[in-house]
Every structure is written in C-alpha cells, then in structure tokens.
Length: 231
Ligand SMILES: Nc1ncnc2c1ncn2[C@@H]1O[C@H](COP(=O)(O)OP(=O)(O)O)[C@@H](O)[C@H]1O
Ligand SMILES: [Mg+2]
Image (tube, rainbow, N blue to C red; front, side, top):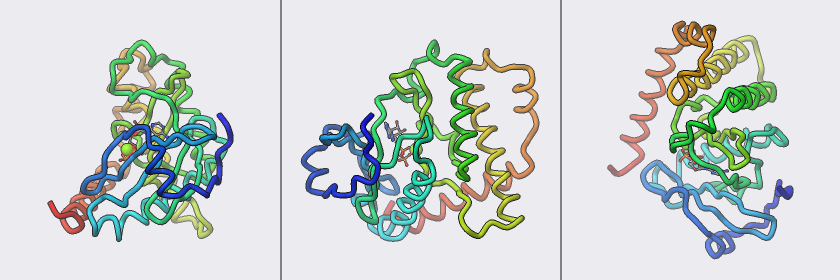
C-alpha cells in the first residue's frame, strides 16, 4: 500500500468526482462513507456533511476530531486502516482496505489465527493509548482480502491524552477490558466452536462496569437521536 498519510490536498470537488462506491449513504446520525479512487490508491472518506443538520453541526465535528486523533496515534499499526488526512471539520479520509464484513458468510476464514491476530491488533492499539469502545458493533471489525483482521470506526473511542492521572488511567483500564471482552464476544457469535475453556470462563464473568457503561451508552445515543435529528 502506498503511504498516503497526511495527503491533505483532497478537495471536496476531487472527492465528488472520483467517488467509485458508497459503503453507506448519510442519513440521520450516519455519515456518508465513500470509496474514492486517488492516484495513490483507494481511500474511504467519512463525511457528516449530509447528515441531519443539527447532528452534523454539533456532533459531526466531535466525531471526526475523535477519529482523526485516534488514527494519528495508530500510525503504522498493522490491522488499522491508515489515516490519510482530515478534509475539513466534517470529513476524514482513511486508507481503503479491500475487505468483507464479518457478518457475511465467511465461517471458514475465521480461524484461531484470525482471532489471535485480532487480539494482537487490539493489544497494539491499547499500547498506543487508544481504547475502541465499540468493537462489538457489527461492521467495526472487517476481514481483509489478505485474510487478516482490520479494526475500523474510532468515532466512539477513548484515548489517553496529556492529562493522565490515576483516575483516567483506571477508567482507561476498564475500556481496555471491555475491548478484550468484545473480541471474545465476536468469537462467541461467529465461531463458538473455537472458544477455549478459559475464554468461556472469561465470558461468564461480568465486567465490573459492564451494566452501568452499557446503560450510559444507550442513554447518550437515545438523547442525541431525540434532540439532534428530525425523526
Ligand atoms: N477503511 C475502510 N476500508 C474498508 N471498509 C471500510 C473502511 N472503513 C469503513 N469500512 C466499511 O464501512 C462500514 C461503516 O464504517 P464505520 O467507520 O463503521 O462507520 P459508522 O460510524 O457509520 O459505523 C464498516 O462496517 C466497513 O464495512
Ligand atoms: Mg461502525
């Protein structure tokens, strides 16, 4: 893959005219996700410009900044589509990975080795100070055509910034545990026969903050849907 990092001269006009596919069309709280052909390779542009107006104006820039900030910390991490650059406050560009969603029929491709690699990607991400927090959502882990796992969608992530203190570190630790647990839950959903005895035991043990964290997530999501979208 050619190095695309920080190719910042992408204009909206170029993006518009070189879009070859849409992974998703914008609507409500969802962004447009275009595949754009550039001289340096294909990229994905995530863009809130056509999402609901209030969501676009208030939340869009926060999510884009979050994704951009996380991807900057994850430069050269295998298994993370690499950052290309920020287009403007509503859109970010990322390396395109030829891949299939895990929820398509790909049982035979999901081997022990696949899950071990996924865990390695997640560990490396944590070493860089980024916790994903939404690994369980369908589509945020994809199977590359090279047979390897890739983690996408850092809109909801948490990363360690300058103000690290014992409290933020303890909180971060909880998010790390939740990510590790999410990897096991993907395995349980798609390849339960591969789970080891230790993994089954781990899945039976609830995480200390699992329930309050989940309730908080649902609350925030409902709140933003209710107040920031038309429907
Ligand atoms: N860099 C990428 N390369 C290939 N496919 C991608 C890439 N980023 C996202 N996708 C595909 O687009 C889908 C939606 O992207 P995602 O970042 O999860 O957006 P959303 O915030 O709307 O969930 C993913 O499930 C994945 O299938
Ligand atoms: Mg997603």
